[in-house]
Image 1 (cartoon, rainbow, N blue to C red):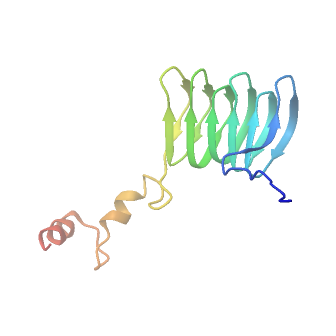
Image 2: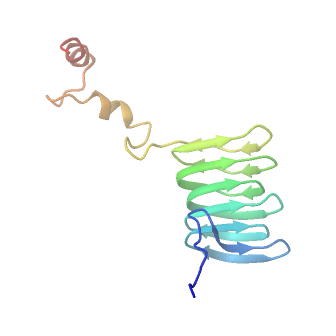
Length: 147
């Protein structure tokens, strides 16, 4: 007789905070977590899904965030932040990839930073460096015309 076990998919939810539940403090997790209840404090983890009935008053630091509920606080994601209707975010967000779908609400500042190039403010210096180490406009024109 064979022992058949279902394997969890890469996107399977590994932790869940249901509607009517709440937590105050620091919530740390691995894998994918879905929040449909209330959270106050900090959330740190991998992939976070905030359901449409969730109310989160927290600073969030995750790899990916999908927000369909209400979030107040700073959201930082290493890969992406997606705000879907009826989601509402009041606070600053920062991620290399940000998607705010039609019908979602976002009030705050947004910073997008590519993991390969650093912050947008640093991009011109990195791009402008030539083999000579010079970054003047004249050298850039010369360098481009030599190709």
